[in-house]
Length: 189
Image (cartoon, rainbow, N blue to C red; front, side, top):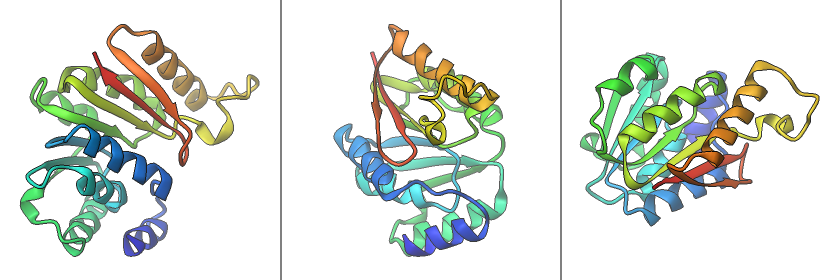
């Protein structure tokens, strides 16, 4: 994990915090997750947390646009002791890849991507998750700007709108977890 965090820093990524990682592991374990989608591979930090919580026969499908990040993550997964068959690494824009994934086939969808894509990722997760599956959005506290009514930048407004839409939807049972940069977790009804 130290290596993955160090490499994330080197390539300019902000990896999930240990608290957010522990929450991801807990969510994966509580749902006995066998099939997980991760949007935003990074250097594999969150992927390792998810894999540690998943069933031993579980497969993590992780999507990222950056081939270099995925190369690093593949190495980190191997060094953490996970067989190559435990991960399916897909290069591409998440919104191009997600429509090709099977409906209702996933136990957990973790989104660690640009906030401007949150709404589309939530819509995709609703289709991808089985009933009782979990959606987890990372970074929903937006650096503390969510609670500042004067913050009107596009990212903050998008996060606020996404949180509100999930909270008001009849399809989700949500909770905001104040770990790391904030994780919005929601169970699909």
